[in-house]
Amino acid sequence: MKLSIAEGLYLIALDDEEGRLLAAAEKTIIPGLLSAIVLEMYIQKKISLSGGHLQVVDSSGTGNGVLDKVLQKLHSGTEVVEQIKELEHNFKDIMVDLNSLLAQRGILQKEKTKLLWIPLSERMDNANYAFEEEIRNNLKAIVFKSAKPSPSFAILMSLIYDCNILEEVFPDRDDLVDAIKVAKDMPNSPILDQELSAALLVLKAYFGK
Image 1 (cartoon, rainbow, N blue to C red):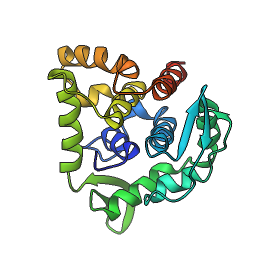
Image 2: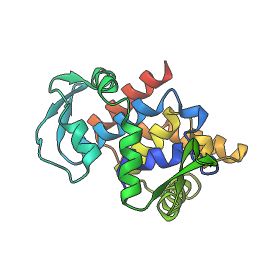
Image 3: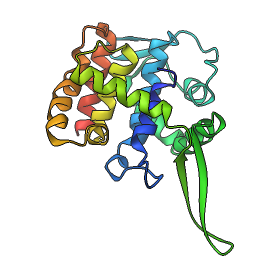
């Protein structure tokens, strides 16, 4: 995936027509984004996961400003869910950071609605839909063609389900039924190692509450 897992999740969580966060994701998006970042840190070997606890093993930069901010706030020895809860207090504005990062890359574009000269509202338009389209196509291939997901896409699909926005990718009811079956079982995918599977299962239980 050309974008970070968190960036992919955020693009799916934005209503393409309204340019705002989907209502279904309002309560889950911040912990969802932070979960995506923490698990990406594992894929990038910045942290290790053992017995449900994370350990920072490499604090050097990733080249992604949003990921680096989160990496500097991780605490070794913390359980995954407790770490996510702790991060939520520090990154309530993480969507603002993602808006800026994606705008810098030319993927999102900020637009303001005005009445005469008075700003009324602000929205984020998808200026380069190719990135989101590629993500959607890969997710659909996993469901409909039994394509083997990468660890990043396995995490992304599991978190899209946890954040209650799977219907955004699979609006057809019959397609959604198939997608739910795949997404619910994604933490058990053989593409994931034991530690990553365990972390996704713990997070799924957390989001389920």
